[in-house]
Every structure is written in structure tokens, then in C-alpha cells.
Image (cartoon, one colour):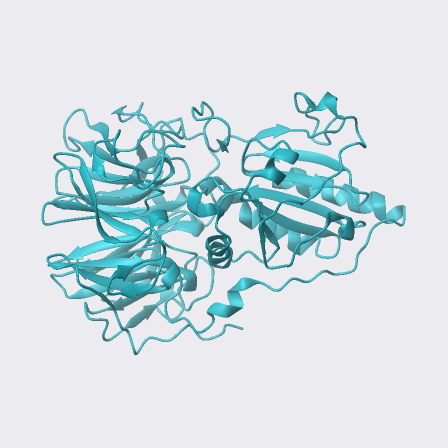
Amino acid sequence: MQGRRFKNISLPGWLPLAVALLVGPSIFGVPPLAGASAQQPGEFKPSLAGAVGWINSGPIDLDSLKGKIVLLDFWTYCCINCHHIIPDLEKLEKKYKNELVVIGVHSGKFDAERNTENIRAKVAEYRIKHPVANDAEMRIWERFQVSGWPTRVLIAPDGRVVESVSGEGNYEGFDRVIGQLADLYRKAGKLDETPVHFASEDSQYEDKAVLFPGKVLADAKSNRLFISDTGHNRIIQTDLEGKNPVVIGDGGEGLVDGGFARARFNRQQGMCLEGDTLYVADTENHAIRAIDLASKQVATLVGDGTQAQGDPRRPFIGPGKTSRISSPWDVIQIPGSRTIYIAMAGPHQIWKYDPVTSEVRSWAGSGYENILDGDLREARFAQPSGLATDGKNLFVADSEVSGVRIVSRIDGPAPHVGRIVGEGLFEFGDRDGKGPRQVRLQHCLGLAYGDGRLFIADTYNNKVKVCDPATATVTTFVGTVESGDADDPPTFYQPGGLSVAGDSLYVADTNNHKIKVVDLKTKKTRTLEIPALKPPAPLP
């Protein structure tokens, strides 16, 4: 969990923290929020006034929902902890479809996250069906005295706030309390069980052959390109010119092994290639998958589809197939080694998987969310989301601190975690320069190394930047801070993944639903055409 008002976070990002809000004793048995005595129970009037835009709905007045149980979800779309509770919200919405209305309140951390159109794209990408208010000016956040993402606020059918809980988890608690409220107000004749329907954003993307691609992997040696077609839950293989597409996965959301036409993924991200085996970070399935490109079979190596809930501060090692992990975002191998390094965004760590022993283990990062250099155990990361290597060092896109980290001496007795860019959870911007004090990025998600240079997907700045790792000098390579979809001059819309093959840089231009190719010598950019590729067929 991240706190809006605090730059130095001492609690692990995963640690649930429950508080009550402006009322008496919490139903979960937690004391009232400090300072709440200034407002007596009954005086506080919940309101969503102050939103600058709405998604999946027009503006909503909470008075119009009297008789309904209302659950407000305060979130920001960069936040991995916020991603983790989306399945819980979906389960509650389905179970209490006539009694409950969920409303997202998007109170953005980054500048880019205060733009309604950017939020609209992410609402569609994350498949959120309920209404979302853009609380860009933090007025609703302040009104409800929220202090961290994610926070959920529960409102009874008579309009009283009865609960506020921050952090991940607590599904069982909300399930129990919502059920109790429904029974109580139903017996009193004050529960409105008329179904409420909202139009969702995702219908506008039905014709996209590629949907919100998160990562891309180009292999010059075999003339193969792999696209993580994240929005469609599938992998696309083509040649480097986009020809002869092969579809891996039927497009359905799930964790299903087997042949290409049957397999399923869930918003998968990064990939790495070893011969004819493609390893995949299956993010929302909390799994690592292996695709045998020769036999056309998909297998699960790590995870069972359930997010790990253990304490990330404790070292972990276990057999892959029976171990649980949390939101793997990218995978990579160091040349000469079969070890697979995993950017584990959920616990803010780097993990390792050994294909020979089938063991998975935590490797770098204390589990605390922030930026701190040092040895593997004491170092801190903040939602690592992209990996690259020069053959000796591991580079990490450390997204929540808008940083680029370097793990050096990987094979030595004392690997060390350092930094090229990044100073803190709330230090971000768009500034070229040299070293951490000068350079500013905004939620970078992807990296690629080639020709002695490190390329950075500066995602929320809509740019690709280039870095000299030896001098920590970072400059804009292509793109402008304003989002766009053009090849000349090149513009992007929140690119998330990069890969180098020869003299070409392949870019997963996520919000444009395209793959773009940049000539590393001339910077000339073109959109990769895949004319034979179609969207997944509708599933039963």
C-alpha cells in the first residue's frame, strides 16, 4: 500500500491496514480513525462531488443510491495493490448483484493518471465494469480522509459510512459485512434490490486485432517476433515483418494448459526465449508459463492461479508447481545461464526460477516498497516491471519510483543493487540529464539493451528514452510527452515494452494497440502491419 501524504513508506506494500471512518466502532472491530471525533456520527454526508470526469457512467449522486449498499474503491491505475483487489470487487459484485453498487474513485498518483481519457483506457484494459469517478483534484479523497491506495469505503443503504479499510485482502470481511447489512435492511424493508446496469468501455475495442499489448520480444537469430497480446489473453508469434502469425491461446481468461487452440492466459506480460521454449510472465494468473513452440503445447511451471499471501520479507524457496507467487511482470535470462529472473511486481522483488531443478526462490529485494541500494537482502524495489541485460548486469525498470536499477556482479559472491535513475515514490517527471538527481521519468515499464545502449519505455511520458549505463546519461530518443499515434514524427501512447533485434527497436505501444518499429540509426518509425491477424472469436 502506498500513502499519498508520505514519501517514506515503512510498511510493506502488501500489508493490510484497517481503519474506521467518521463513525463509531468498526464492524471489523477496529477503532475509529484518529481525529474523527471532530465530526459526530450522522453529521458526515458522503458525496462524490468534485469528480472531473466519469467512466462507465454519467455523474452519480449517492442520494440516488439510497437503499443500496455502496462500496467505494479508492485506487490509482499504476498501483499493483489496487490491481490485486479487482478480482475481489468482481466477486462481490456478482454475489450481491441486486444489493451492492461498486464505484471506483480514481485518485491518481502520477500526473498522467489524472487525465480522464488515460483512466478510460485503463478501465477497459483492466476489464472494470462498474462506474469510475476521476478524482483528479483529490477532493473526494480528502473528504473521506483516505491516506493510501487502495482503500475501500462501505456505505450502508441509509447513507451512513460503516467501514473503511486500506490495503489488499479483506474479501471475507467485506463479504460478511455486506451480507449482514443486506439481511438487516431487507428485514427492515429499506433495501433496494432493483438491478442497476452500467455500460462498460470495453465494447469499443472488439475489432482490435491486438489489444493493449504489454510486452514484445524480437529475436533476430530465428527471425521471430512475439507479442504479448495482453488485452486478448494470448501470445502472437510472427516473423520480424509481421507475417505468418501464429496464435497461442483461445483468448479466454484463465489458467489452462494444453495445445495452442485450448490454452488460456490472464493479462500476461513479459517473455523470454530459450531455443524453442518461450517463457511467459502470466501476470494476473500469478504464474510462469512455458510454451513449447515445436510441439505447440503450453505448460505451467510456477503457480496455481492464486496470488501468494505470505510475508515477502521472509526468504522463500520452493518447488515451482506447488509454490504461489504474486504478479510476475517480466522474465529474462542472462546469456550463458538457464536461470530465469522474474520481475515480481507484487512483493516488489526480483525472483529466480531454475528450469533444471524446477525451484523458484526470492532473490533480490527486502519486500518493502521504496528505493534503496545495497546487497540483495536489504535493497528495496517498487513494483519492478521490466528487465534487460548487457550480459553481465541486470537492469530493472522500477516503475513506482520511476527508476532504472542495476544489479551488478550477478554471478559473483556479493551481487549489488544500485540505481541509474530514481529517487523516491513521489519523485517523477520528464527531464533528461545525468544521474538520479537530474533525470526524471514517469512510471517506466519496459527496458531493452542493444548496441551498448539501454532503451527505456518511459511509459507515462509517452516516450522512449535512451541511456548510457556507464555515465547514467538519459536523453529522449523518440516520442513527445503528449500522447499520439503517428509514425512521422513518432508519437506513442503509454508504451509498455521494448525489444531490440539488429538495428530495430520494437515497441509495444500499449494504448494504441499497436507494435511500432524504430530504426536505431535513423529513428525512422513505422507501424508493424499484421494483416492476417484477427481478434479472437467470441467465446461461449
